[in-house]
Image 1 (tube, rainbow, N blue to C red):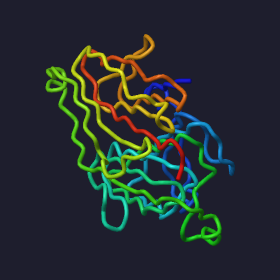
Image 2 (cartoon, rainbow, N blue to C red):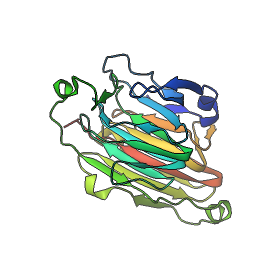
Image 3 (cartoon, one colour):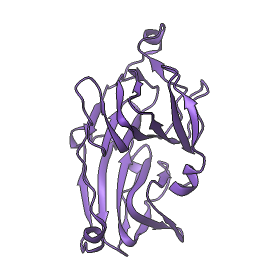
Image 4 (tube, one colour):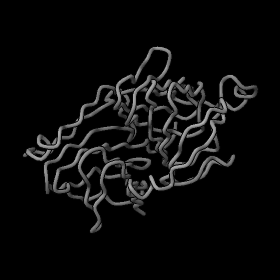
Amino acid sequence: MVQAVAGEQALQGRRAIKSRGTGEEHWRCDYLGKPGDGQLKNEPQAFLIEMSANEVIVPHFHEVDQFQVFVAGNGSLGRNKDGAAPLSVHYADHHTGYGPINAGPHGYSYFTLRAKSDPGAHYLHKPGYREALKPSAKRHGVASGITLSTEPVLMDRRELAVEPLIPDLASGGLDASLIRMGPGMSHTGPDPRATGGQYYLVLNGSLEFDMKNYSKWSTVFLTGEDAPLAFRSGPKGLEALLLQFSRQES
């Protein structure tokens, strides 16, 4: 079943929480699913983390595949400063360590999008993490420096464009792309039945689906059993990420 959540609705649930890794305080908005409760669940999990100024989220791994989309503020991912641009997409296979995530002086905000709900992070500085590791393809990639259109340029767009973001990882259904559409255009996405699930994340303009309009920071999730999503761009056009999971975790 398709699950769509409007950004303005989800942001009303913003709340302060403490990082399980460091105890530092930041903010969280849940879109789909709930925080990890120690059990892996076959249901989607999507949330927005808004880091405090100069906060550090220490290296860790999860038990499920995931995308992260950095959407506001500035910072870096990993010791090599990957993903330092304000708009970046990061993918990591299950049981694949990454981090740290370093927020700049004005904070750093990112979405975490999963087709399955994770039990909770395993931090590499805490005892017992090695016992929790399992075999994985260890796929890991970052697309940084993604640029969105200004409003007049997007409204003047005459053709639809789909731009691949992490082509080196595209296999078994895994893929990430940026869709750009001018006002009032119609489009049908790729078949999610060839994937392990799909997310659409609205970054600019709005997406019209099922007689509703979903604006910036809205999400739409399709399972691997749903039909392709047929949608239209709103009156100011649309720029949205399409993030696909592999058919089977490897």
